[in-house]
Image 1: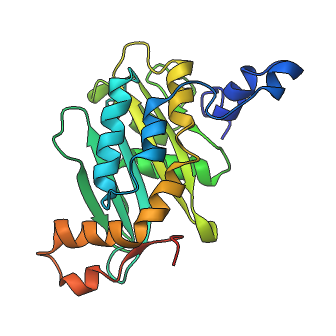
Image 2 (image 1 turned 90 degrees about the horizontal axis):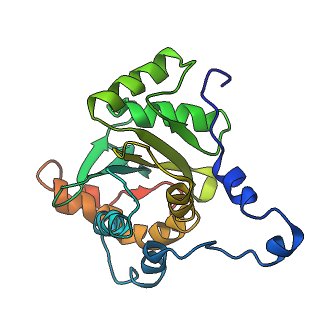
Length: 233
């Protein structure tokens, strides 16, 4: 991974905020006010559909001045005909877009493929910007996509679930200067709670998403057999 541009990881940024013993003793999570995290933790237990949760989460992040323009979450699912589900949000959408993938099917989302490759190699955060240098061929494809979509910064984190399953979440912005450190901190501090919230709802939510949105493509009973990998049984 030496050919990737070097950006501080989420853990490094958090360590930089606590540079003496007194600060370390006082450290709490979250380290700064985060209304979107508070909403995710306290106001989503009654929502059955995670696409709705993700859509509202993105809307609330925008409202608190975190300049996300794109966001997406990828979940592996256990189903005889489907292996993964992507929920894609873009600023200006009235509802998120859902994309199902078949086993063995390569995702059409270049960001997902490259991010999972980097995370599989052991990084805990994958970030890329158009002005980065020393790029590999795969990274140059992402750079071209960022420039084409007028995006200035992209960051992805793994979403660890139970049974060793790892899913993915990413965010991108079109703000000229990209994400600031406080933006990245607000986003990264969502990551520990997202799997907890989504795993709690996954027993009904993801199966019902498939049934509700894709019922014309296969019988509902078959959809109801699906569940995210690593979800609580």
